[in-house]
Image (cartoon, rainbow, N blue to C red; front, side, top):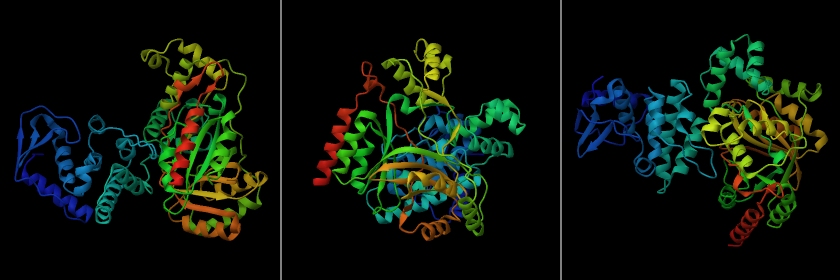
Length: 506
């Protein structure tokens, strides 16, 4: 494919047909190919010089991808393209040929109140049709946003992208679906176990799991057991959006769940040392922020499609029949050996990557890796699990039902019959069954009506949320107190409470 005006015009017409919209930008008058190095960045291999658009002659077979990318760029709304360079990831997604080339020229963005922005992982796993639907919806929503506000930002763009992604599904082969189905039912299985249950060879199972991890559909295989580090999980109900940023910037906060409605509460999930749980609760409740401590947990991920007319039957059978799922308490630990700050630095790395590859850890400068890993495993500090993340299992929706602990198992089983729930039982001023459920777009509204009819006033929340279980929390290893064997987070808690109090008084 040649990089000339005719080729770009042809590509623009094709995109215009697919997106059902006109470009916001004009095609440059002159388009040339010159023998020059391939530049890096979002427009890798292409540069503008006045009225000329110049393609590097060294792109070779990638020239077609570059032309498609530059054509799509013309459809990105002006305010977003000028202010948010990451919007060019939509052009890369549309033109996708070499995923590696894209990954080399984009970047990961961390925003404290949102999931990790990694466009190739978010969009690259989607089949071509779903990818087109996603970028089409995103540019239309961005165009609408420009009519509603003069202030565009990365945060606004990313929220638009997340909304456009919410109903997408990855392309998985029959083998991929078989592996995911097994892991959804039993995430603790080894590759050899999955191979035996599915009849798929171990190398194929390994490659499939790698793809699932790359697409962030499963996490692991290694996780850090937070209770073994003396951390309790606490859910905080934030009645005002003004409070979100203070929580999001705190080292205590594991993740934020944004509800779609600005008038509905959002929620912060925080991890605090056990001795700080009471001061946290006392401080937040004095500010009229409801708090619940996680006492029990349970989850179930469905891969089958539930027809809307079948919701009532499934719900009735789950409520009247034997319980299929048993709630669990946060992972218990055996007596562990003392942990050093260097141990904690290694655990932070394991939490970030999910890997305990000895060779990789040694290359990164860690010492005594084999002994440390054995110490972690024997002490219950780390555990093995390919845990589903909830991504692609449906529309993330937050539910809160005011039930007692004895009813929590029944509620978990009922929701598991009609959705993919990730529930916790909370004790405190925020009490009951709480957490995200992933529902099919077709059944979400009917499910809400049924639950409202059955539960009445006990169903206090059934709200769509922007994200599910994503988090980019880092273990604050540098704050590990070796003598007391706990994190020194008292100062962090004081700063959070002080900042919240000042904000609420203003």
